[in-house]
Image (cartoon, rainbow, N blue to C red; front, side, top):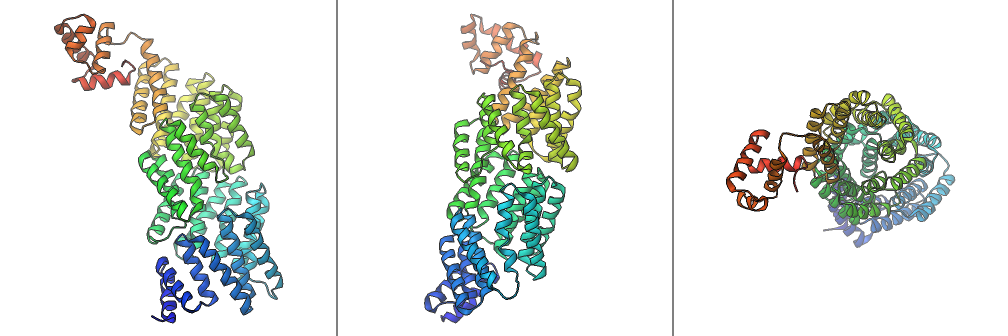
Length: 544
C-alpha cells in the first residue's frame, strides 16, 4: 500500500472518529516519507486521543515547525497554543507557558488578526478564573467568544462560552452560568466541534453542574458524554473523566459498588492517558469508602486525590468528623471554605453546616444556612432546595425549635426521594425522627429511625446506620416496651443464633419454658419466625 493511500485512508478514519485506524494509517505514511503539516496535526490529535500523549506532543511540535517552514505563521501559532493547552492538562505549567509565549510572539508578527489570537487568550482567562479574578476571566472569555464569532471558528466560540459560564458561576450567578452551559452544549451535541474541544466542554460542564448542585443537568450531560465516549471506543482522553463523573452519579444514587467500579475504571484510564480523571476517580472512591465506614481507606484515597493539586474537600473534613474529631473537621472546613472561590465555597456549605453543628457552634452554622438559603432563592434547583431545607431543619432542631424544624425537614426528605438520593433521604429521616421525639411523639420517632436504619444498612452506610441505631436504643431504654425483661433476654439469645436447648441451659430454664417465651415474643411483636425476631433484635438494639 502506498503512502498516498495510507494518507487518504488516515484522513477518512480521522473524519469518521476512528482514532486508532487514523493513528496507524497516518503513522505508517509518515514513516514512509513524511506528512504534510495538516496531516501531522491530525496524527497528533489521534495520538493524544488514543492515550499516547507524549508522542502526540512530539508530532504536534513537528507540525508547528513544518508550518513555520511553509511560512504559515497563523497555523504555527495555533499549534503552539494547543501545545500549551495540552501541557497544562498534563500538569507541565512551565513548558505550557513557554509555548504560549511562542504562540503570542508569532501572533504579534501577523499582518492581520486571526482566530488564533482568541485561542491564546484562553490560558490568560483560565489563570484569572482559578487565580481569584473571575471578573477578569469573564472579560477574557467574552473576548475569546468574540474572536470565534468574528472568524467563524466554532471551537473557539464554544470554548469562550464555556469559560464565560464558569466565570459567571464563580461570580455568584449560577442560573446565568448554567444557561450558558446549555447553550454551549448545543454545539457539542450537534457534532459541530472537533474532538478535543468537545471533550473539554463535556467534562467541564458536568463538573460545574455538580458544583452548582444541579443534579438533573449533571445526569443529562453525563449520559450524553457516556454516549459520546461509547461511540469512540478506542478513545482514552476524556473517557476516564467520563467514568469519574459516572462514579459520582452512582454514589449519589446509592449504587456504591458500581461507583467503585467506575472509579477504578477512571483510575486505569488516567494512567493510560487521561490524567484529568485522577482527582475525581480517587475523590469519589474516597467518598464511598467514607460513607461505608472504611475511614483509613478513605483517607488513603483522599491523599491520592490531593496529589493532583486539588483539595479533597469537603470529604476530608467529613472524614475527621466521622472519626469523632469535630474540632479538626471544623478547622479544616473553615479554612478550605474561606480560601475557595464563591462557587466552590457554596458546594462546601452543607458539610460546613453539619460540622459546625457537631462542633457546637450554632451561630457559625446559622451563617452557613443563610448562605444556602440565599443560593436556593437565586438558583432553586431541587438539590439546592433539599440541602437548604435539611440545613435549616438541622439548625432549628439543634437550637431547640423542633416544631419549626419539621416542615423544612419533611420538604427536604421529599426532594431527596424525588432526586433518588437515598443516603441523604435516610439522614434527613433520622433528623425527622429526632424532631418527633423532641415533640413527645416517640412512636413516630422510632418508626422514622427504623426506616432510616434499614435504608442505611441496605446502602452499607455503617456510621450513619449506627447513628440511627443509637437513637433507637435511646428510646427503647427509656420506655418499658412490649417485652418483659426475661423475654428481652430470650430474644437476645435467639438473635445470637442459639437454639432452645442452649438458651434453656444458659438461663437455667426448661426447654418448654423457653418455647413459651419465644411464642409470647412472636405474639407481642407480630412476628412469625426466628429470622424475623433476629432482625427485630438488631434493628432495635436488643442483640448482644
